[in-house]
Image 1 (cartoon, rainbow, N blue to C red):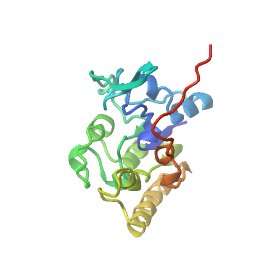
Image 2: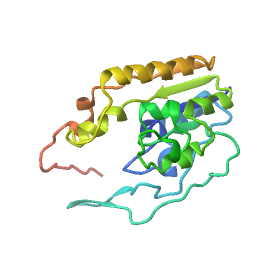
Image 3: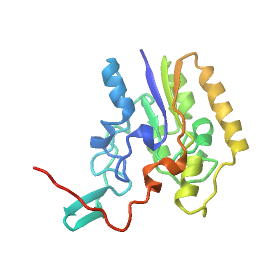
Image 4: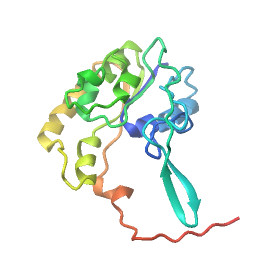
Length: 208
């Protein structure tokens, strides 16, 4: 009856280094909503090429990828209710339970997506309560270690004890909603494609 998705870039539909409408339409939660026949599943849509500097392939031979020189704009910022997709690119676990806007982010990430997606209405979990969610998907926590790993250990991360404390708080808050909750696990960070070395050059075969 009311489906709310909570998470980070994986939930938001973030692709190719940016958040943009033609990618958001294929977020995994949007596809779930369509397959389930959910009548309303509003997303914080951003016009192409989106925000974040979308990576675009300009040539296959030689292989050239460039960053878009233009930026998109929010398309439904004035939507009068919380969005059903509350996936915020770059969000950490603590943001799920404490952040309502960029100004209220305890990590001070200076992340503009908090203002675009959460809009000061409440934390993601609080907004799920406002929407009287009957189904919630929750996939958060990978950013608590991903940046540290991808930046060679030069940026902070959440130690296991802190992570466990925050995760328990989030799960308790979700349980209090009285909704059905689907929780996705976090894979080993070194098993993700980013950390799979493919060598200095990659051969490509193009078929008609």
